[in-house]
View 1 (tube, helix red, strand yellow):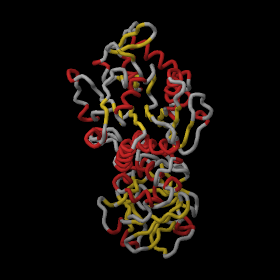
View 2: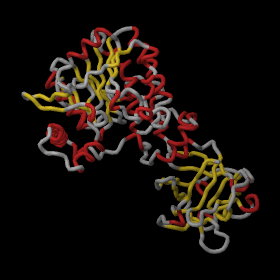
View 3: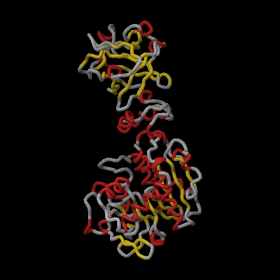
View 4: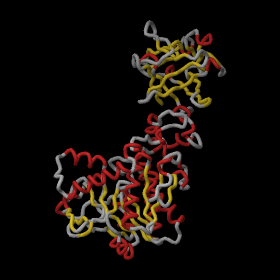
Length: 449
């Protein structure tokens, strides 16, 4: 039996709790972890309850860097969950059963009933609710089945299912009102595949269905509706809300949640839970936040480079037309008089004089070409003069460093004199490279037009 999970670094402590709980109740099961980070981290190495750990980028997923640029961390993890199955089926050819558990799961009993269900059906899913009297309309938003658990038995039918699910999660795994990552696709699975809708109350017990399942503690084990709790699916936000809601310290639920939190702390919660997701940043350090939404609507942008994370926001958009909007006065930068006069931030609307092409040079260095006259913008007189679009070739005066200041804001530093481009507050608001620090007058929104 293979039990797998997919996690980013900030949930690694939870994956450890999950893996240890598996080994506690099913020591013969193999626990295989997929880490969705650029590089292996030290906290993931030599974990005694992990039989194997693999980086998501090593699964053989086509165009993997482009996938990571398109998705946020939740979407990326959910997409990899579906694609991980194919890797595992090939990696462990002698294994029969494959079970996915989210990293925020704690196993509390053996999975004997699940194995019996898998012997009858090749695919097992758990609905969010099993009692129609307690139906919650959030199901219409989040889906009938919870994707934090799924299980397959090696078979042609299971392989067809994971291929189908993986294709849809790869292309359309967004968290929105249609898809909810990889989860809502499961609503369709019983119509296409031989699926068991597993209604044992002890599997995938969670905050969303706890109202329909009576939790008790008897003879050293937890029971729900008279049957063993086999695993509980925790949620960080739910735990926080529960503990702040004056719970009964004597209740079985309180005891279970408290024990889980203590184990999470023991296994490194405070040390690693704040770890930023590495795929939120370009390799040189700039954030991908400002490009991700544009990639989602125009996936071709992610293919401008073999590995988009080795570029920058603007290297991915270098063939497109941009406008520069100054933060200090919210006005657009124009190549005044068709490029014959210095650049000025003084336009309320974008026209031909406000169109620029951003040319990626090397790393975070760029050049700007005005489409008013197809000339390159220069820091005149080596930075002593104003910016003007009047050069036919790119040299040091025409080269700028583009720096990301978050929330879509950028600053330009002239390579000619190593100073930041400033929107002058007086007169026509011309652009001049004369600042040693970045403030409001040195920040721009650089927007694709």
